[in-house]
Length: 302
Image (tube, rainbow, N blue to C red):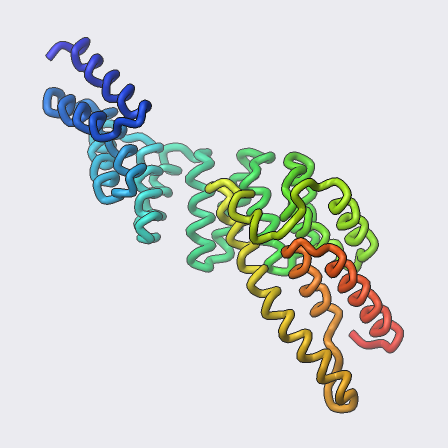
């Protein structure tokens, strides 16, 4: 068949897909392939349709056929994404690294590798691939947010604060990370700056309400690293609330037998109240933590 006729079929398949007629588009691509089995874009676009339909087995099959005809880093990445969706992480890693072999600065591969290694709890490689993204694109939103939360969860507060400041300078409307910034300031002993940030947020942030209501809609899919970190922190904070209340009650009832909670416990509680849109309670616990720390400092307790 003449190349002009092939191009017409291809254009029609693309048009159908863009208009949402995926089944008709697939049929056109299959027709094209039957006439020209070496037309790699037909396999690539079929793979994209199957991936959109969450049929990742067929997506991988078509992306692989495209690669055999014309190797392309984006299709190696696409296969990696499909294996990631299937939770076959080692296979995903293999293809994502193949994509980087062809294009070392392909940010999406670095980012998804960081996400997979976080899932596998491989801290070193999570940090490496997030840092790679920052080296390629110093203002990359997802990598800055992901690194800020990565450092926060590992108590690396100075590094977390630096990433938070860079993130919020570029993307100032993220209330969740402003809350984390407030908490990091408090954990470093800067209670005044932490409280001031909270006060400012309550005055200026529209929609400063329940954390649960905003978490799902506040992040794009590519921001999964930061979102998952925030979900973990919220769960931990809820457990801390119960522990703190128990310690406080026992220490008040039996001061000779039970020591009071630590300032760190109060800080963890402040985060819980921040996440649930209660800045007044959060500030109360910040003040409480500051007083406890001052008492410890006066008595020489560490």
